[in-house]
Amino acid sequence: MNPVTGAVTPFITNLPTGDHPSEQLAFKDGWIYWSQGSTTNSGVVGLDNGNGTNQSDIPCQDIVLSDNLFDSGNGQLTSGYSPFNTRNPGGTIKAFFNSFTGQVRQGVCDGANLRARLSNPNNIQAFSWGYRNPYAIRFAPPDHALSRALLAGEDGPDERGARPSNGAPEVLSIAQQNPDGSPDYHGWPDRYGFLPHRWGLDRSRWRCT
Image (cartoon, rainbow, N blue to C red; front, side, top):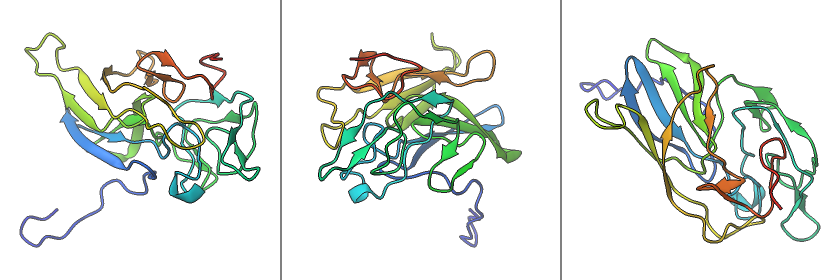
């Protein structure tokens, strides 16, 4: 933003939104980091998500859905990571696939911490994912025991919708990319603070019963 004229120049645009928007920013070594909240409460678009109008969540890596379907009433059964009233048991959802647009936009997913170089904002990377809403992000100081690690404070899920989560904790995590450049995974929406959800969405990661 120009501090003199107030004019705003878009920097990174068209990010997913729903229950949670893009949240806090952090900067380190020429990168901009931001927390990208999930579009739903617990991975399923239900009537609690804009009366079913929210876009479905976007995974940061390829996932294979479980066979579980979630009931929003009146015969409306929805798979995880799928548009409202869409059944896709056992289906594969490709990384960064946006069901609203029907397209893959590299690096753009939700329930995640994302980053881009300030010199090249169009090259977005998934840094860490598997959060409901990692709204609070900060780097630890260089003289701290965590030595400039990225900390993510997560707003845990609510007991509502087609897939309520009772007693899920708030979590503070260390977010980091894996050595191969892939984002590390923190369990949402099938685990909350390492506690398994009764009805798993993604059978490629957890087999919860």
